[in-house]
Image 1 (tube, rainbow, N blue to C red):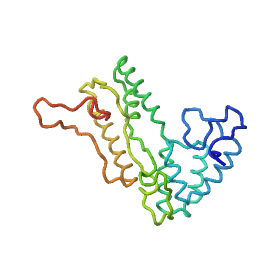
Image 2: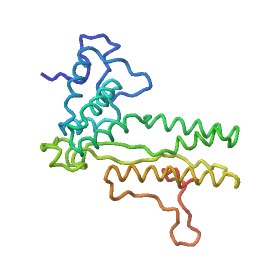
Image 3: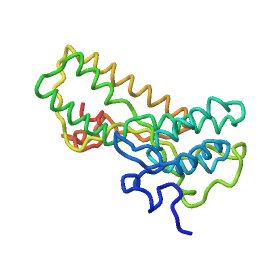
Image 4: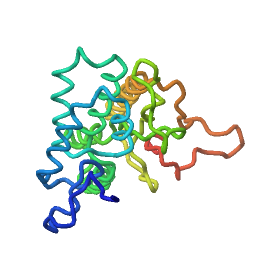
Length: 236
């Protein structure tokens, strides 16, 4: 009693102690121990159970081996899953295939250093667009964080299983990027593509309301958009 079935047992090697089926961080994830590998295989056969999607939605990442098993099962059992179940699992897979949030933040700081040293270049513009891509995030619904779904897929709404959101990279300080007039059309095109992808993700997740920051300051003399905003678009 009291064992965490998603992590290794205390009698296994110390190097395996932090290996988990979900919640792993870092670019190098250790392989699953045999016990967890068998458990991952069993879980991958339960995609038709909304409780498993609810569980997976509470983590930023699943172990790559579990994720690959889920992808294989999705392709193999597409006809067996309900439309909502297939949609939720595809979104969870997409979310897991992204780079972690901290990787995006580190990439942004590296981008700023290279921009300051070398200025704009075709390669830097490509990096800028990669960094600016919206990210899909997931969490357990507020009303169900401790209460798992008790119905089948056909009797549930997406928001009752997983709470998806769309985020752009956060800024923690003003960046004051110098954007020359000649590359402004390219920058605007990159921004538009990022917003179009965000709109597509919002539609797929069934999000009807998404709060954005205004580009228009309050109608007060001398007012301006706050540069302390965490929205990257407001500083460009």
